[in-house]
Structures are given as structure tokens and as C-alpha cells.
Image (tube, protein in one colour):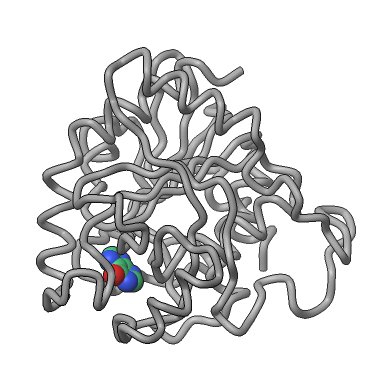
Length: 268
Ligand code: HPA
């Protein structure tokens, strides 16, 4: 399964060896439109599913950005689409086999922290898994990772510092905080957001956690960045809609792209 996908992609990319992976969240796909040397549709890759969400294209895009070989997932898989956590995490195993050392996982999120505003970017320092499942459930591939992987430094403080420094140096302000993931697809209730806040969450969303767990398990360095697209349910009582989330993500995309490109430059 894994080997079929890897073999197919390797045939298509030849001697392009990706060092950095990026998962582009809702509304952030433009980075892959603007930097595209080779594109492979998910539908063509053995055992990849085709993503269905509005605002997600569904392809792997390979490009040189700031002298680094990058592979971007333009579109990702979500639990709320009906995929298992294992399916959601599968592309990360493929990227590991392609040779990436670091992954930048981005997402659109709701702000739980009252100091956050729409269009803010938040560097993820930790997460809370409220999805009720884990992508590592099942037989363990011991060649790739341990049965009981440590998650103390899932978002390494070294990389959090690096992203903060980069943000500072280019004038992109960053919030910092803990990301809590629910499965969706319904947005949260105000009571659920009060719970998330009591648990220590600064932002909530419906992605990232499965991919981050698989990446960390496979010894890939993880950077997580959320685009805060709205105040979470009950924080300002506004009605939440996917269209508004995408609109806000679009408003933040220029600074988001600038930040990511600069982080790529600074990664070892
Ligand atoms: N909740 C969950 N996921 C989200 C939100 C939200 O408020 N905004 C963007 N993605």
C-alpha cells in the first residue's frame, strides 16, 4: 500500500528529493499555485483518496522555494469526510518515505483565546486531541516509529522559536498557543468552546492533530501554524460559516505565504 504510492510518486518526480513538507490549509492553496514544478493529483496516486472540501484542490505539488526542495499537500483529508484517522495520516507516511525531515502543518481555526482576532496567525505550541481516535491505532510499523511514541516535544520549542524569530524579522506578528481538534463537521457549541477554554485551548479546528501525531511518530520535525479565521462559537455570538472562514483565510494569505517562505529559507 504505502510502497505502491511511494513508487508511483518517485517515478513521477525523478531525482527531486523533497526535504520539507507543507500541508496547506483552507484558503491557503495559493502557495502551491504560485510555486509548482511538478503536480500529481491525489486521484492518480495508489491508495490516496481524493479530497472533497471546497477550497481544497487535492494534489501534491513539488517545487523549489528559496533553494529548498518542498512538497506541498494542496488539500488534505479530514475525519469529517468519513476517512479514518489512519487514512488521514497516510500521506505523512508517504512524505516520510520521500525523505522529508520537517513538515509545516497549516490550518484554519476558530479563536478561543479572547485576545485573538480574525486573520491572526498562531504558532502551535501544543495540541489537545479531542477527536476520539488516534492515527497510530492498529499494527505498528516499527521501522517508521515506536509503538508508544513520546509527544512531549511534538511541536519542538526550537522550531517554535525559529518561527517566532522569522515572524519578528519580517514584521509578521504571531500569536502562540494550544490547538484543540474536534472531528467536526459541525462547528462547536458555546458550551464546547467553554470546555475547550477550560482545558487550555487557544484555538479549535478539525484537522492537524492526526497529521502531527503521525509526523512526530515518524521522527519528522513538526511546525504547526493556525490562521485564526473567526472567534469560536459563543465568543462573540457571530454565526459561523465555511464561506466566512475561507474569506478570512484569503485576507491573511499574503502574510501567511511570506512567513512560510521565510521559514523555509531558515530551516536547516
Ligand atoms: N471551529 C472549528 N474549526 C474551525 C473554526 C471553528 O470555529 N474556524 C475554522 N475552522
